[in-house]
Length: 250
Image 1 (cartoon, one colour):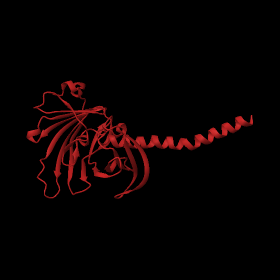
Image 2: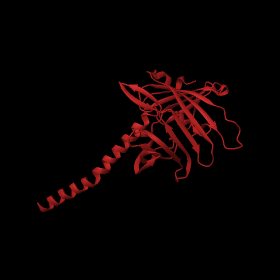
Image 3: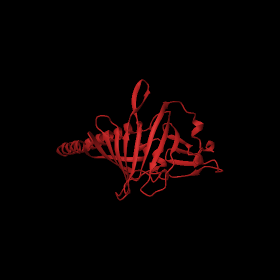
Image 4: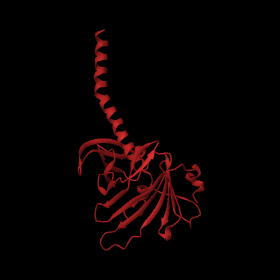
């Protein structure tokens, strides 16, 4: 009987130790999921336009502006290039963690990585709908101010090499639940790029108004080169499943 009581006590002590960690992991996952929604992830049907303006380092050649139209569902997104003219009609399809690209002069789609550069400092994965909930394992590392906002600071570690970045340090506003800032890192922790996010757009789903990103400014870690992605014309709309079929991409 004494041994049984001792075992019960030890089990209760172990649960007391591990339960807060489990709860914390669930809370962190919810933070990331909420931040994803404001960046186009996790909704059944959304369409928006992106205008990418890049400024290179001193001495670099001018970089043409890009305009794209993005369509996204829960687990897939399709980005079509509208400008510049020499890239018009190019499409990038992402389904789960797989991605393909096609151009008017290609006979069939080719598999690509979301890490490929689209323009300036923007990778192809930066343009697609954000699904950090699926692509990364997150943990809370600290809390601190980011500008004039108190933020949770999360460390995100990629679950697969098909994620856009290996590691991300992610600042999420405690009051708004929105991502404020990010740093994109190599596996060893070397800083590659940083990003800031703004949310002057909104969408309404099931009567609920939800903030949506208006600008993402991505800056190179070693120079002043940066790319500003401006988001506009966001609308909630049902999208045919056929649009996300790689067989229909060409």
